[in-house]
Amino acid sequence: MKKGVMRPGHIQLRVLDMEEALTHYRDLIGLIEMDRDEQGRVYLKAWSEIDKFSVVLREADEPGMDFFAFKCVDEASVDNLRAELIKYGCKVEDIPAGDLKDCGRRVRFDTPTGHKFELFANKEQTGKWGINSVNPEAWPEGLKGMKAVRFDHGLLYGPNIAGTTEIFTDILGFDLAEQVVNADEAGIANFLTCSCKAHDIAFIECPEPGKLHHASFLLETWDDVLRAADLISMRDVSIDIGPTRHGLTHGKTIYFFDPSGNRSEVFCGGDYHYPDHPTVIWQEEQLGKAIFYHDRVLNERFLTVLT
Amino acid sequence: MSQIITKHKIQVLNQEQEFLCPSGIALLVGMETINSHCIDVGCRGGGCGVCKIRVINGSFSSKRMSKAHITDEDLQKGVVLACRIFPTSDLKIEVLHTPTSKQVIV
Image 1 (tube, chains in turn red, purple):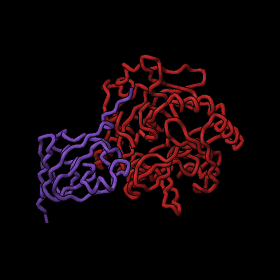
Image 2: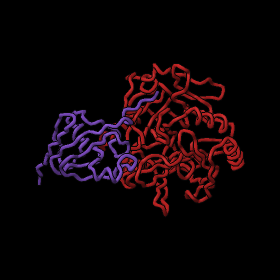
Image 3: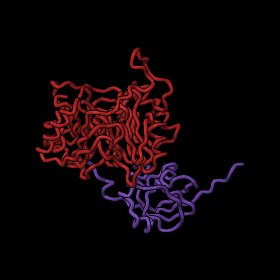
Image 4: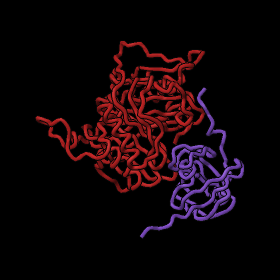
């Protein structure tokens, strides 16, 4: 957070059918539908989040990710980072306040991996859903499905992750918490954090630009991950892999797909990272174990199925 | 009143395989149900393009597929994603696995 970037703020995902998508994000993952706009976009959040929304769904011809935004501590930080991004050579676009409902102005920039990111400092704060801010209870009643606690991070695929990583570390002040390196010690998977989490955003090298691997939501316990797996079977949802554990970050996880083919993850636990910690390194020859700690073999679908 | 489920014969010409797919079930799911692997399985939601096939003859209904993988021109040629089509007759198909579906990171 040394340059003022606090946390993932929102992700806008494209879906082929909005009502089907809501059965996934709202009824299965358990996000709360907070609002809709005149463009037909639907705004959702997980119950523990303070800001009004963290996931925006937009119906489109092609699934995938429109943009991923980070919240900064204040507008001055957004201004400073905007200037640094322009100086570095990023294409920067100013999005006015209100373009996303109840969200302040955003600064959008592109990256070598072909993804669009945004910085913003202001969004309406509605508080934790179903919980008083004074003398708060442990959790709200009336949650659906997997009862996701928060939108946690994203994993994106594209070319030149070294270039995008440089923007995140040198300009935005992220740390490289964990990394997979090849025989030449080049990073082929970079996990970056602006907090104490093992990752707030991650990148894996791939020739196709702008790809989404998954959007991830936090659950509290391993039992919650198993229960999520039960719901995936009970509702006949398209599964990818799990429940299992990652070597990278050591999170306990399950992967599945939304009805448009965007991959979702719910997970619990995992490593933490402080700014004085060295980068955790995995070697490419251990990639199977790095990704799936128990099977220790790669599932080709995990590497190649993207939106 | 119970209905008799119609099963359609799916012939996968370039894999020399065939299987029966119940009506109302996506072709790809029908294939997975009998534990066949003749078509690669990806997201099962019309998004990733891994299960691309061409329908040579027969009829089907379909759901929306990603324009990044299936263009209007593809649709006219019978090129579709197996996860998004529902056979309404026996079908003859061929599998169109693309090099991108086989990419691995370097």
